[in-house]
View (cartoon, rainbow, N blue to C red):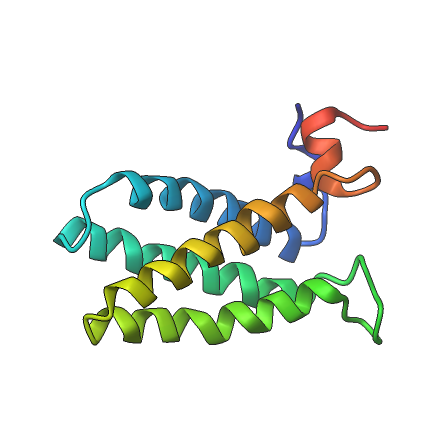
Length: 133
């Protein structure tokens, strides 16, 4: 494992990747920690900021082009940018079930599943985790 491919990439890529890794770690903390507490809310706001960073930074990454400079991952980014404020609003309205559902599926879809796709051969994270091919 080497961070060199990531650190040598265009600036948006390491920002995107490190924000995603931090969001993944904080997401695991959120799942394990007590809900509704001040620490939960504080870590939650940090997670929201990280996920917004992940989503926004993706618009400067154009490795998988399908329509002009954009690819399918950009649709996920738009979805995340819509769902983040919705999830926060649901928590504010004490609609905990909907808040939990949105946050859980955003974690699974935008971090776990999308993260697994970054490990495909030819991708930067594949070189980071498995070494250069």
